[in-house]
Image (cartoon, rainbow, N blue to C red):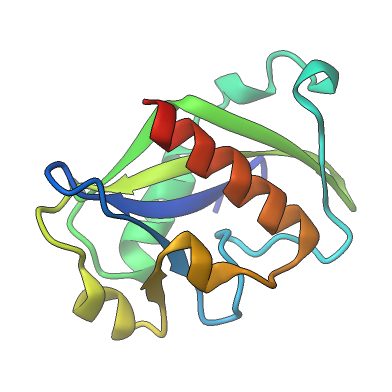
Length: 141
């Protein structure tokens, strides 16, 4: 598993623009989970160069964990956000579930849920800030 990054999985319908995020069994939205003391780094304060470390190993780990085909997840190369956490600064990426319909059953088999932004309210502050950034990015794109 990559030690340099975290992923937020999302589904966005091509026709309806329905946008859902994956909630993992631990209740969080990041894989691997963000430590409790994580804080979002403002865009102007981010360390250059960290986002060039694309999480291919992490993507493969998610594919294996959820028993997905190798072509069902795709990194959104335009979005990245850095978080400071015990052990250093890590980059958070978005990974899109590339399927026609939301894959509820596939994820539920592994204890995950696909939920709209409103269904995720009340999470850890760093995760809520990440969701706000991610949702804004997805709506602009």
